[in-house]
Image 1: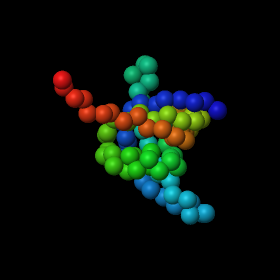
Image 2 (image 1 turned 60 degrees about the vertical axis):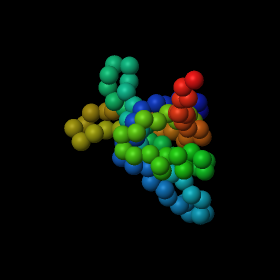
Image 3 (image 1 turned 120 degrees about the vertical axis):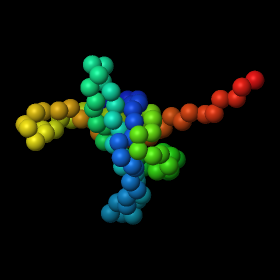
Length: 102
């Protein structure tokens, strides 16, 4: 398991779902930029109530930072090119607090 912090933009909207045993969870996709300027999609699933609630409030394109267990994967596009992807089980979300000017 890799414990990671992912920062990027929400790609689409977060969706709430219900598991077979009645558990509620949220899924979404985060588009993150790599060091060479390419984009990589991170498939996110969250079970923690606070993380789920915050993800559901975000709009498409919103900046977000999540931490959790990361699994690197690969997939093949329609042209046969192998591309990287990431799966993240999010356990924490970093929120920006409003700054108070003194």
